[in-house]
Length: 126
Image 1 (tube, rainbow, N blue to C red):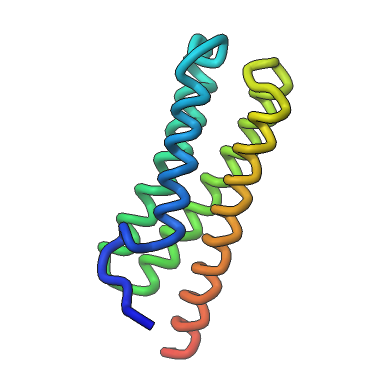
Image 2: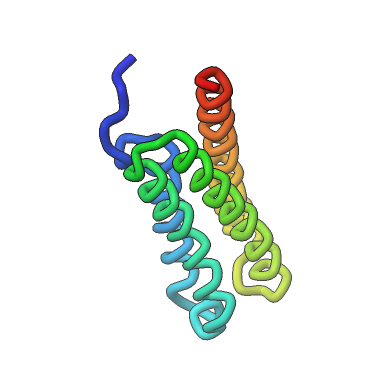
């Protein structure tokens, strides 16, 4: 197995990038685009996942990477919660909700696995 040398090689970061792109597309038109508060909050949360993975990875230490992975996972939950609001007020339909929610769940599961692997490495090195 090859060692990951760049944060861009992380599957979690790649999936988070896709989620961010889809969030931006979804919030770029219609009534969602006019709700500045919710639009910006869900966008910031999606960008936060990518950014925290990149920052944690580049810091070079497992404890730091683990910490930033935990934050990224929290941002993923934030997106899921905001998607409910967007669906409930009619900014997105059920199909859009299901697609974005499924992608957010996928990212969350990948982050959970990454976080668990980092924790095991930290525990092993104690």
